[in-house]
Length: 200
Image (cartoon, rainbow, N blue to C red):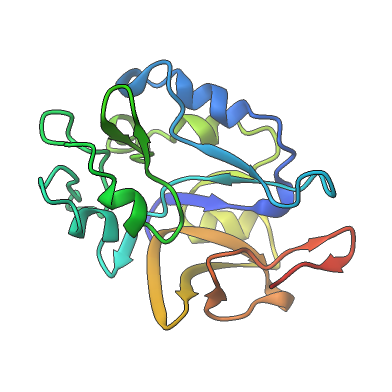
């Protein structure tokens, strides 16, 4: 069973950008946000989804596996770190390897930038910045048991399928228990928008 991690609950996201602002204040990358707020059907719906690093466990961090400079390290507790600035060569292999589209390249600095689960905080038991400010709980930090005690009737998905490749992650997606489909196709959450099933 997963330990303490982030659970993304897309049905609760209101697109307020508090997570983006809080991430920008993090000491390790002050001024830059490592979280992306995606609008799933912009112009047609207000639905939004926070995108953080999913900290892939199996296979272990595709971004780290394709890094020719060994700049992306994975901690003993499974947190996939942001690229080491002294080693990253800005080649963008990690960007192309990530099935969730998380790493970005800072073109000016020629460095990879991504969420590292606020490791400077979570290593000491504190919640990541994004989860501490989310007003609706769309980003929840804790254990599966804590999440389910607070939100009866939900399940979590930590296995996603991309074509024939299955990826198990250290960060999970909240899905309604009666709508769950395993594994979640394409890494997209199983959600309804205005009563309409938007699974693809």
